Structures are given as C-alpha cells and as structure tokens.
Image 1 (cartoon, rainbow, N blue to C red):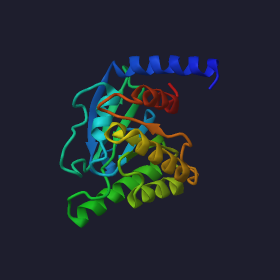
Image 2: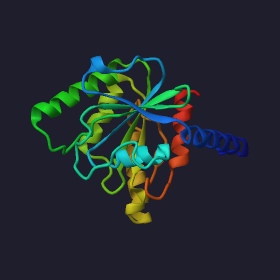
Image 3: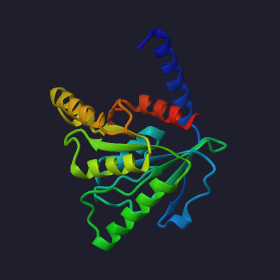
Length: 217
C-alpha cells in the first residue's frame, strides 16, 4: 500500500467511525419477503453459521452494546433484521438467519433458507454480503454452500473471520492462508479477508471503512 492509499484509507476509517457513532436504529424484522422495507437505500447483509459471532460483530461495528442481541442459543435469529445507519438514512445493515446447526424443526429451517435465497437473488439494493467465518474452525461445508449460492446469484461478498483473539497467532495465520486460498476460487468473493475480534476491536475500523466503500457514501 502506498502512502497516498494509506492516507485515503485512514480518512475513510475516520469518516466511517464518525458515521457509525451517529444514528443506528433497528427498523424491522421481516419473516417473509412481503415485510421487507422499501428498497430505497443500499443494503449490506451479514451471513454466517449459528454461533459465529454475528450479533457481537454487528454490535462492535455499530459501537453499541446490544443493538443486535447476542445469544448462547444458536439459531435465535429466524428473520431478516434491518438496521438503519445515518440521519437521514444512508444505508441499512441486514442480519440474516444463522445457518448450520440451528436447533429448529426442519420445516422452519427450510423456510429460513427459502427466505434468504430469495432475498439474496432478488434484492436490487443489496450491494454486498459479509460471510462470517469462525477463526477457530475455518470454512465448513455450510459456509461453502453459502459462498456457492452467492456466486450463482452474482452477489459480491467479503469473507470476515470472527473471534480472531480466541486462537494462537500461529493457528490464525494457518486459517487465514487456508481461507484466502479457497476464497480466491470463488468468482463473487472479494480477494482480501477481514480478520476481526468483536471483543478486542481487532479489524473493526477497517471493516467499517469497507462497508462505507461498498455502499458508496
């Protein structure tokens, strides 16, 4: 990275931090597509396996303690939850149902999958998806399924490693290398990984800047 690029990134991070320290409000939960808000502003969606730390990352990203409720019970998020950022609203963050080992009846899980797939494929204002991956476990088959679905839907996405503070630095390096190598094989994936820790604040400023860049504000 050149000095000029570093200066631009620092400027973008400062602007992103200021924006996220302002208005961030829960808008609505959509259990069905008919309840989606009007597509008036860009949207950034968050996807990840149950218990990947999605709620914690959303809270860290927005600088709030509980705007997204964290839960020890996997699969708590069963709807598309929308949060508005900016005053007036500049863009929305969308918390999608966790996938993987959600403790729910098969019919309910199938309903979630249908909701998510249809949203991803048909939402014109969806500008980016963030696929969250637990640093301790790396990519699992359910993550690969999501990445494949995003490739097929032509929805660009960033892979975000969570809980990076929970493993040794040497193990983290191995995970980063393995995930990066696999990510490069996916046509809709952004080539650079984001390595984060909601608890320690690692990578949060960079992710905020990336979100701002994606929504174009």
